[in-house]
Image (cartoon, rainbow, N blue to C red; front, side):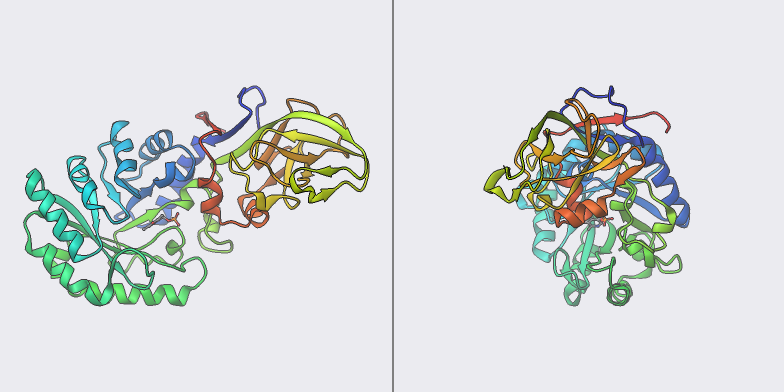
Length: 382
Ligand SMILES: *Cc1c(COP(=O)(O)O)cnc(C)c1O
């Protein structure tokens, strides 16, 4: 994707290529059997891409429903007018339950106590609680520990105040350990046997996040998937079945050069003087820093693209500005675009590369882009 410098007057911005979402969703849907429901994960402001625009586009592209982390995120989705199903992935606090019910959300049940509290809230409101039971099969985070799941299944089944909609688990290591993931699947599949067939046949049964999709089996009872990272164009691991789907990155990240100047050899650059120039150097000051989502871990390690060339970061990344070396480039000037993530000219900085410099994981690189960074949406076909 090329950058149109006239597109934005912002100092720092991310471009969101909405047609790339259409193509990614299309590829993922094509790779899945037709009966499998596509739950689009849009938590954390749609992984930093901007929830309202992205959620709307995802629905247009054919996803079936949404998942978010909490009630506040779900409320935003309802405010923009989406009445699709919304699954809350995290445990719900007692104080949030009335709102979750009034918004018609699908809550996740992670314990008997939580189920009882939701039941009490439902009794007060007169609404049925739409619920998915989450089972911990080896993630060690949310969900009822699998050895105690039977009790929760029985409780939910026995109460008419619940509309039991689904049962699921979550993989901890699907991007790197297939054997462990299969073990989690096996535990989950055995537990499903505890649910009477007549009940089970009406449930959404899901386990797969983007990485789990690599071992998704159409013959298993799974009839839904929860897709995050992949739909934003990043395969969880390279060389996988998913990489072969060729998802396209949706987001690119840019900022303006605000000052260019020459510094003599021996000058110490930025806070704590971690970089001392070994030659006379032309530096460009770029209007982006850790206040925007460039971690200080990238100091003296990462690169920005300016005029299509890789320019090393000099010294510490600061809150509002980052200094790069443009000595070897003709004509770097105020107003030039520095690309932090994405393509410029013939080169591209991938999220994987950025993560290596910034010492983070792809999910983190995307959702630590802060609100100061303007989101610019491209709606045209590219
Ligand atoms: C965030 C999340 C997902 C999506 O994971 P990706 O790796 O981004 O596809 C799926 N399920 C649960 C429970 C999650 O918390």
